[in-house]
Amino acid sequence: MLKMAIIYHSETGNTRNMAELVAEGAGELVQVILMPVEDLNEDALHEAAVVAFGSPTYYGTMSWQMKKCIDTLPVSMEGKLAGVFASAAWPGGGGYELTEINMIQGLLVRGMLIYSGGVVTGAPPTHFGAVSRKSPEGFDADRCRKLGLNLAKKGIELFGE
Ligand SMILES: Cc1cc2nc3c(=O)[nH]c(=O)nc-3n(C[C@H](O)[C@H](O)[C@H](O)COP(=O)(O)O)c2cc1C
Image (cartoon, rainbow, N blue to C red; front, side):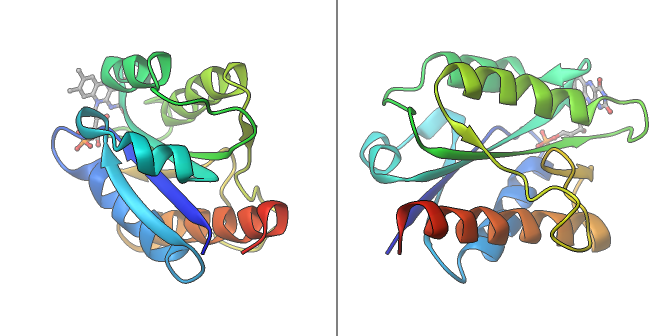
């Protein structure tokens, strides 16, 4: 079965809750492993064809913990499929899309293929990835599940089951 890793940083649980919902969406189709940035599973990461990255927004960008994680990932990410998700306290100005774009920049440089599902795969839209105000509920929770499902579908399309 295709393997997907979900790497996240979370201090107060909001991004972790997003990660669990991304896992719920993807878990219908692929085998998922959740990894906090402080406890990466190198073997599982090596085996994962799809990797999602989630960060809280800190001063309009990803947290330093996520930046350090992306800078120091212990296995080659080249050719793996990636998606992103981010939480923030203040949607509409707080910067969660910037957090996502900043993560995407680093992941592109590492040779990853980026996918969000975009706005063409039905509601709710996942523009750059899934976003949530604080802990995801309702629409925000649906976006997380949908990101997971879309990453799993695209992963199977690219790499097979
Ligand atoms: C140091 C710090 C900086 C933050 N900066 C922002 C910010 O620029 N914009 C925003 O909307 N929220 C900001 N927040 C709020 C967090 O992004 C938000 O509470 C997030 O959901 C926390 O995720 P977590 O529970 O996974 O740790 C900041 C929080 C901290 C601790």
